[in-house]
Image (cartoon, rainbow, N blue to C red; front, side, top):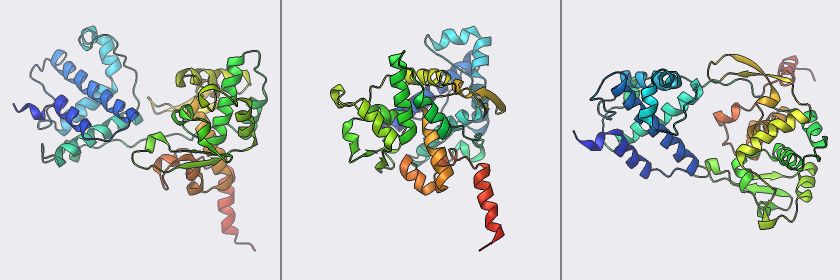
Length: 335
């Protein structure tokens, strides 16, 4: 067999030809390990000893089988301890929802499209394989009153929590992703405006995002001026920050019930908002409250780094009852 069409070496070659950022490359490496485990599963559990994930032999039926395996992988592995031994130590497999599976298969489709462009194959197995569309619930975000209550809550008895509270409120007022927030220094603030290029889209769209600081954001920056290393704020790790955000909301009494779409079962789920709070809640809060006021996705996207007309941006918009009332008033046509 011509090994150049076997998955692992060809996938490595594919990655070497892509100008991916660090985060996106990590996602593709996760996909590579998934395919490796699927091959082991076919050989050990299905006794298909000769099975190879060769791009010339992958067909829609194999893609369907791969999809079902990955969707149920945690249960399959739990029922077959021999797979855990074959996979090696350190392999952690959780439940996967439809949106996650969608993103995985889009990455795999991109690989097969590259294989066609490089003439390793002439037809993609994805031609006759349908990727299920992503589904998202109504975005959950904090109200302006809730942000104010968090900021006014005295947490000074726990200095670390007080500091991360300030950082969270600051993020709610500039709307950046946590990865960009962690990288910011004083040099990102120019004449009262935070300027940065979002790292997630820097390869495809290196547009500078400019967000004027309001009085709350300026007050927070003033509180932490003079940090060593020209740091903007006293950040901790992203994971510890997420843990503290849950504690911050609970301490401030922000525990109302939120309705979300369960990512695994795709069914409605009601949970206290503090339990699902994370750094991305700050970004949704910024977007949701501004959009509710100006109702202009292009204007809001200029403050968030989304490209104009982005389908991703639509996930953050909450078309609430006030907006709907304004829309139907158009039909009155009163002068």
